[in-house]
Amino acid sequence: MDFSTVSNILLWGVVIIQGIIIYALTRQVGVLFERVAPAGALAMNKTLEVGQLAPDLALQSLSSGLVNVGGVQGDHKSQLVFFVSPDCPVCKTLLPALKSSAKAESDWLNVILASDGKQDDHAGYVKQQGLSAFPYIVSELLGKSYGVAKLPYAVLIDDQGKVASMGIVNSREHLDSLFEAKDKKVASIQEFMQKSEPDEQYVEVK
Image 1 (cartoon, rainbow, N blue to C red):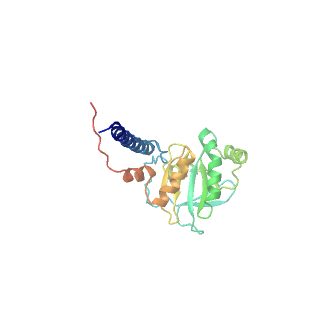
Image 2: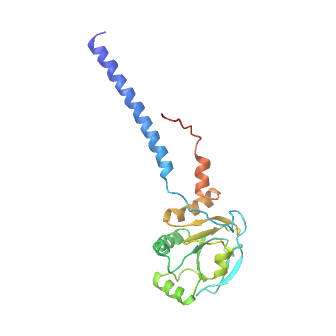
Image 3: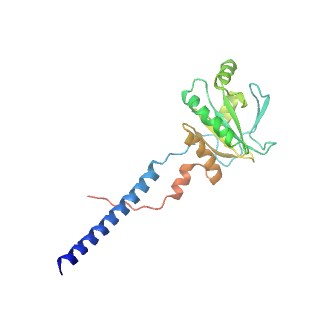
């Protein structure tokens, strides 16, 4: 073979090797993205389970009168019960996202804020943070009935009064994951991602 033929063969060999390397890198990037993708809200709860009927309670709010939490609502909307505290800094940072979500999802969702403690403390919190548009319930019974141990915590109840999703909410992604879990009819986004992951074989490299 002459020099030109050998050069072309070597060049094509280099191109093929580069193509294989790029494909391998692309696949690894995809796997890495799956592993570092934002996790959904962590559903730590020893009282409630997704799919069961939410506790049906009629409780007094600070300014909206009696509020029915759980059960089938007259407007046939879902409820997001969002547990906060004036002493919770993460709760404060999430309030803008909560307000935005409440407005964007208002055609199917009602947002209820909940906490416990002295009502005077919460009245000032509502005014300071501009939360008067939401029913605000101060009730130790509500938190215990819904198994809330850490804040901020949210429970999404569907239009049939069943727990659709729930979990600790530390970011806007966690909040959105509750809605996504409801749409996908799964207990949590973590469960959905685990079911969606293809079986992988791991080879030990020595």
